[in-house]
Image (tube, rainbow, N blue to C red; front, side, top):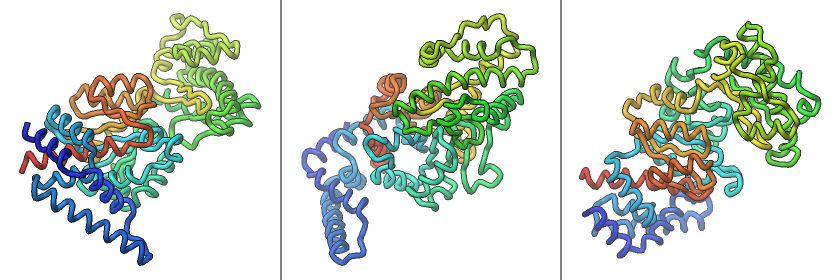
Amino acid sequence: MEQYDRLYRLYETVDTETVRAYQELVDLFPALRSTVGLEQWERARTELDERKAAIAEQFPDPYAEIAAHLTREEAFTALDLYAKYDRTVNVLVLDVDETLRSAGDTDNEIPRSTLHLLTEFHERGVPIVVCTGQTLENVKGFMIQGLGNDVVSSGALSVVYETGNAAFTPNHGADTKRLLYEGLDPVIVETFDDVRGRVLSDAPDSVRRGCHLQGNEFNVTIKPNAEVGSDDAVTVIDEAVRYFCGLVGEALAGAVDTDVAEPELLARTYFAKDPEIAAVFDDGDLAYDADLDGAPSRYTDALERIDVGYYEGDAAELVSLELDKPTGVRAALDVLGIEDPFALSMGDSKSDLRVMEWLADTDSGIAAAPEHASQGVLDHVNDRDELVYTAGEASSVLKIVYGMELLAGVEAA
């Protein structure tokens, strides 16, 4: 109870809100070129140092840092988590879109407070695994812009991209780029190659003119030319997914080299197990009533290893079920040399949930999610540690994890 008593006394007796304000000013608004700006920054830094020194006279060393970075609620949450797991986080596994950044609240940029904390973790030797459905070039671009090339190329940051198809970990020689999709069954690879080569050229005019192919290495992803989420985007992606599912079925039939009757109908029937896709078929008066049990087993076995993702007004995507984010994360951890991970996993979607569940099943980490995450993700996070945060404020969870490390330092002293 000593740690709890100290925290209680800290937040009761110290104006921690002002200390945090000075710390934020020093961290996020560094010294400017103007004389006036430099003087203001130096005054803030001096005031911060004096206030931290006053805290250090009453509390063990890390408590000044706790006061400067964490709210009372964040500090007590950090202590609860440390007491529960008796471990600190030794790797960050982070989704990006709608997790680190939120288009509705942060102009689709990762907030400076979040970037600063990621840099702080990097400097403390905590590796970062960015785990996303995006292409490698997109991720590299905004991570270099946000964290700097030195961090991205340090050897302590890995990018799991295209939802687990590959892992890119700079400065690791032959292991720098692990192309996990190269190990798939040739039938699956051939199906993806066929779909990729024909998806736009064979498409109906409205889909061919209204969509473009995202530049993935392996996944096949159709994106709308219209603004994502707009009525036009919803219409064209609905048309695209109706066509796309049939094309996948046809390509798979060619890859398995087996006589398959009505492969397009078989594929639509299989993918209609997703109620959202079934609703799109219904809206287009498209049948999905084939007898899957009567189809060749070689075809249905292969069909069960792939999936079509439908994202209303955003994308239609062909993915391999044998490659997912947990697979990519495991590859990244192997390259990074993390044999006993205890990770913070942050995400908002079904693909992120798979990582969270894997970490929970192996007692290898904790999970956090934004409040707008899918219901399955929210249920998991709330059942575990209730680390749900407001959109655009991923830094609040990173501060809690930072607080766990600081509190562990007190106990070790």
